[in-house]
Amino acid sequence: MKTKSILIGVLVIIMLIGLNSSVFIVQEKDQVVITQFGRPVGEAIIEPGMYFKLPLIQDANYFEKRYMEWNGDPNQVPTKDKKFIFVDTYARWQITDPLQFFKRLTNERNALSRIDDILDGDTRDFIANNDIEEAVRTSNRVPESSDTEIIGDSLAKIYVGRDSIQNMILESANKQTTELGIKILDFRFKRINYVQEVQNQVYERMKSERFRIADKFRSEGQGEASRINGEKERELKNIQSIAFRDAEMIKGKADATAASIYAKAYNKSSQSRNLYSFLKSMETFEKTFDGKTSIFISTDSELYKYLKKMD
Amino acid sequence: MDIKKLNLPSEVKKLLEYWRLIVTLLFLVIIMWSSIFQISTEEVGVVTRFGKYVRQVEPGLNLKIPFAEDVYKVPVERQQKQEFGFRTLRAGINTQYRESSSAKDESLMLTGDLNLAEVQWVVQYRVDDAYNNLFKVRNPQNTLRTISEAAMRQIVGDRTVNEVLTVGRTEIGSKLQELIQQICREYSMGIKIEQVVLQDVNPPEPVKAAFNAVNEAQQEKETLINQAKSEYNKVIPKARGQAEETIQQAEGYAAERVNNADGEAARFTALYNEFVKAPEVTKRRIYLETMSNVIPKIGNVIITDDKGNNVLPLLQMQMNKKTGNDEN
Image: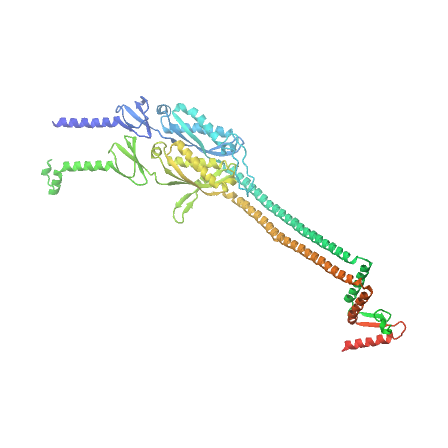
């Protein structure tokens, strides 16, 4: 009785262990390949849920189903126009065929190492076949500039562009990865930068460029100021001369009118002319004689003729 | 091994008598413990049964099947942020920032005209699809960082350094948000980009002075132009006024001249009309009248006679009288 119950107990424990090693759970993020003595059997399990396998004989190999990271080793690469740049890349990849993946790469580390080989090589090739601008720029967009600044920065024309290079690398890489059971979903340049020695040269170039722009601004300012000054001088002369001309014309016209009025009055007959010169003389006497004047007047004159004798 | 035979306190003995009940209760507590769970307000719970997604639960107390179901809590309402080019050391009223060399590497980038610029920015985001966030991408946070850096460089790579530093700031922010969001969608990351904020955008340290020189030159240009304009404005309106004055003066002169002429002519004509009636007399009258006006004003009037020699004494006498007057 007692040995029987012990036997049952042992059996239950063995069953539990068997159950435990035959039941396995596939999470949403997982996919599983079942192997029997190291050899894969059946299709890969992609759907999450609870599954069974033969205990002890079969193993469940878990693989990631989600997109995974890959970061490139920052590479020093010469471009087609012989500029040395660092290219730091990244990609997202996914195990699309776990069975194939298991056969070819076994685990993630091997996979990453293969992706390293493929993508780093392709990056090198494509960068070396293009000018630096093609890797930096995406489109031939026209830079906008505010109207106050005519700095004159311009963008060189590109023919391929960053997007296209990225896509070409992606395409080329995927051709090489299909039989590995993985797919690269996206490949991008994370950082592109000059190598340190070039960087200093670039700084020098940037400086000289900015100083050139500064000089341009300064000379533009001086030029504009001179133009305004000239305009001022012209305007001033113009205003003054027009005023002088108009004033003289007005005066002249008035003089003419006055002259004609005088002439009309004085020039009626010889008598009127006579009277005018007589009156003018009289007027002149009144105006010009004063206390300092001495005058000799003969008694023969009209004025004093009666002084001598009354006739 | 009978429990009753052991020398134990009576309370313990009593307790041991109910051991079945206690075990059952303990079992129930464990069941309860692993079947009730709480989701706080900013989270949702993603429930999987034997690994497979079954449902999503809202904040509050929730139930699950013990041992068979698992819960992943995802903070979908919490706004999270990532900083690029700098790190917040301590957030507060006076927030402190730190710029390490690795952060410098994040911010230094090539512009489209092959210049360098340092751009610092912040990406604010929220998980908006818990399922995708958990099960589509491994390590979504890191992925977002990488995406942001690549996207920023792509956008800056299409602009001139001047655009990046000045006019393009807001445009770059919105374009970046668009691009990051688009890539997140492609990856099914379940992340919604709430906002992208550009912080400091600067030229690299070694060329800062040169960029400042451009700004200064620009200011100088404005100043020169403004000075010239102000000089213009000082002179020209004044000259206009003076011109007006000259014209008005001329007009005044003209009016005076014509009016005088009219007056004099009228006067003359009037006189003339009377004069012609008796020319001799009128003329003489005028002559004599004038003389009577004029003579008193004259200092010395010496009347001479052709036939007499008495001019000199008379002259002498008058001179004496005059000097005598002056002496007084």
